[in-house]
Image (cartoon, rainbow, N blue to C red; front, side, top):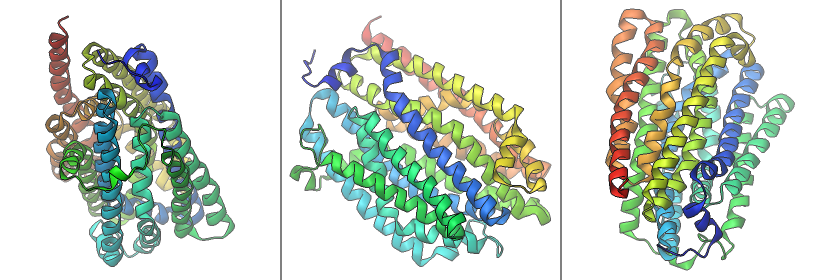
Length: 456
């Protein structure tokens, strides 16, 4: 057994897995929840400061942000999973090379997305479902978001590295800095200066700049397991290949989300008739509410990742099984409680975003239907995190893409023809239920395999 000198490595190898997951997940949950609350506040400020069509315009930008987020998640998650394993193996040199190559990729891809996005912005937004009424709102917002894209990518990449190397509180602090600054500047720019959508976008970018500075200062410290080092400046094709292989799963999730949102927006405009733009805004509200719950479970997934990666690297498979079972219980509980709150108080939640009574009434059934299978979504998300962390890229990609492409996409094509707008809403719980069953098959089989490897 490896003798670890670093206290964080000893904790990952020896501390009870339940307490360890809480220790690692709590900062991530706080950070992710705060980030989701920021997005809620952003939508609330936009809806109340610029009107219902502004919410619809914001919803139109989701696919483009998902594309950018897909690349960021691919590099962040892919590099973090590799770093955790190398930390478990005690291989610092390799971890430094992973960190350096991740930053190179973030800067390069972030710049490409900025240039291409700004050059073809209106064309892209129209493709995503923007109408003449919603295009000006979406354009104003994304023009500024794209300009700050390199900051966004490197900020999120460094944040993933903080969690991967046993600094979840630092990662939480960075995200809280971004969130608090965003909310303060949102209120100032939208209501104080009257900048509308542009004010919301400026607030987002400037908040991330503040958090980026905090992270940059941390990685200047050479005593940290991962830091800025000359060895990381060398391009390593083998490392890039490994990062992309593991990161392909979250990349596919975000890319599929992009495709799905485009189809949803177009379906709502098509089947919503004169209220098409209004229904796009309704989906934007549902998306924000659901993401608050989903982000909390993502926090468990982020807390799970370094524990699973480290203990697989250290060949402590019993601990891997134990932390996974605890994570499944926590995720299921959070999603169940979250849905119950949405089911009981949908009108109150919708009213936070808009004073438009028609939009509120349309939100109530959408919230209740779309999220009714949320108790099954938690285990499915933990399964994806588990296979990403254990470097089982093929299974992780299958689980991440199956919900959207194999299950949700066909439902979105078929059901609206039969049920109109309600067909869009019902597509979500059906795909969630089937995705859960697929994830359960793979996860049960893998946990049994780990038990046999351990010999218990």
